[in-house]
Amino acid sequence: MVYRSWAEIDSKRLIQNTHNVYNYSKKGILAVVKADAYGHGSVEISKILEKISYVRKLCVATAEEGKELREGGIKKEILVLGGVLKEELDYFIEYNLQPVISDFDQLYLLKDRFSGSVHLKFDTGMHRLGFYIEDTDRVIKYIKEKNIKVEGLMSHFPSADVDPELTGHQIEKFKKIVDIFKNEGINPRFIHIQNSAGLVYRCDYCNCVRVGISLYGEKPSDNFPLNIKTVMSVKSKIISVKGIKKGDMVSYGGSFKADKDMKIGIVSFGYADGLPRELSNRGFFLVKDKRSRILGNVTMDMTIIDLSGIEDVKVGDTVLIVGKNGKEEISFNDIAKMCNTIPYEIMCRISKRVKRIIL
Image 1 (cartoon, rainbow, N blue to C red):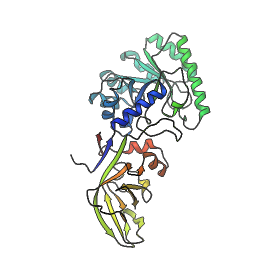
Image 2 (image 1 turned 120 degrees about the vertical axis):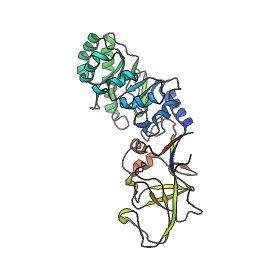
Image 3 (image 1 turned 135 degrees about the horizontal axis):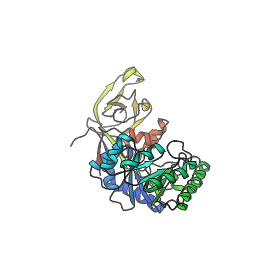
Image 4 (image 1 turned 180 degrees about the vertical axis):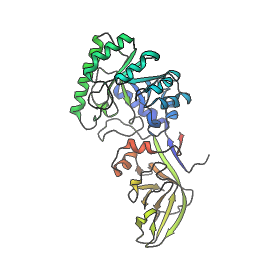
């Protein structure tokens, strides 16, 4: 097959990153493959991860994502982090999906039809989804009355990379919740609060970690101690090489004006493929081991780059959008910093039309 743009997924790096997380945490892994596995391809990534014994579950955001994995042949247990809506209940039953329950409306949905086990989520400081600690007694009373099977207790860190004090308070609060359940004779198999950034915190009462970004090789903080490597490199092709004259304006709006005669290349990769438009006149690609700056506005399907000083470039040559070429490298984190965002967002932007190739 011939592709204009593609993403190469290094399966060996994915496996090694997962192994490094396991060796560091000494806990089972709940692998987060939501949002198309952070843009890496959820089915393809899940097929690799489900063969690893210490990967205990795969985590998605919605029932629809869980359905996609099942239809892709995935057998491992799937935890749906975003809870359950009434109209989705059939998916949970038909595709054997496990819901995270975070409020009483969701809890009441289960009483008539759903007989599987659940994970209960508690809000210890994120203030997004989750029961409060004050709800604990009421939750326990209800699940005992309705004989709801609780397989897991969980919470979530919002600021483990930047706020150790808040994170420490969350760990203490979550332990109180876990202890209340245990004192009531409820001992879930899975206790989890640590995400990738939270791996550096001690949380002995938790027996598994729920990680995503570290599996894919991007560090959640600059001082992250694990040795991990980027799993995905993104590539495209030059579809035209041409010259422009001094004074010529480039791309929509003419936001770049040549101050000399230049050689330019048109790359078959634009914002519809996931390249942030914020990189217009700021970012760069790698061409033949050299940085080639983006000229003018990034367009939907194409981006114009400066080929001045780069020899022997021709139509069909490969351009590196993300990855390493010789001594030069551009990472998702590099792009994120240029766009004043986070690598998670840049990963998730890589669109479906960029073919994923598993190496």
